[in-house]
Image 1 (cartoon, one colour):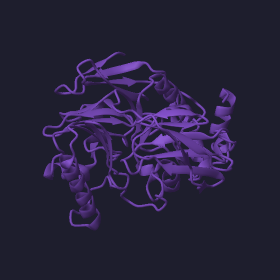
Image 2 (cartoon, one colour):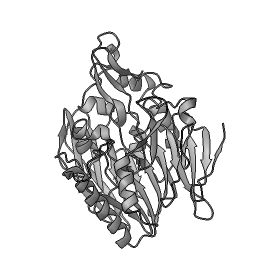
Image 3 (cartoon, helix red, strand yellow):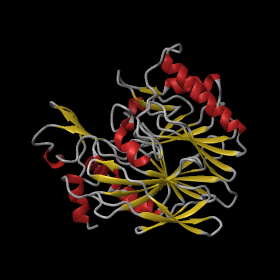
Length: 415
């Protein structure tokens, strides 16, 4: 697709992603999926599967619909190794050694009656997701993890300020194409993804696109809490815990919502303990230990107190080595006693959260809020099989290198 076509797709309602795009979403063995999007509709194709035993088979895709787009989908059989389509091939790694993690990627458009925010989606400095995804593509990672909030183009009713965005607003297919599918097109075609649901995809917002585009097959009804997914790569397990609908405000511990959250969390801990994998990552949207700029004055505020309370009563298993989250639009690392280190990667496109010098002085011990910049994280195993995190910015420049398996998660700045 030309640069002009890509730019136009972000500004006006045009036929974004003209060619069909086929991509793979990894979940547990029963729910990993392949989907093909036909933006103008049409007949659903088949894909060819190469299995781990080297046998090939054809997998027909079932018809679905999202506005005028055809959503063709199927659940992947166990032991699928490669998914071949007309657009290319996606290899499912047996043991990933290079992983890209990003989050909060959409262009923030929420401006009504003179209030809200308009992020300039056509400005690749102000909304740099297309630059970041091109850089991420060059990493040639084995797996991409998105920790939620793909869709931000909700509403914009100023006839002058919003004229460039008419047709790509709301919760239909066009804003999903402009915010995520089109800029991420080439990496969707090439690499398997783990999709984490963000609060922008909860049942009050862009849930229909989430259900039809990024959820396992058959999940058409919106639920507040999706089932926890366990994606296994031999001895390495990635646990996808849905926190999209967990309120950032304190819950009454006796309320139905608090009890439901506690039960889900307890079940996840018990499941992790019972599984054979000894190296576990937890991926979620809302951080367990994160700091947002305070709304009530200078300073910082913890996010999410409800999740923190769970871990105080029942700590995560020791074999959980890292937690990855988004939601806060910055890069942060928390190293809190008795808990695994947590990395927040919520700076991959949407408007950044800014922390004043005064606020930074109030950051408590164990929390690290790094200088504001858009970017993503590249996780690679070193020669000793330990994970090294490289935090990269707009065009793949290295901001920080973090030895995440060492005490205190030391990070070396390169800028």
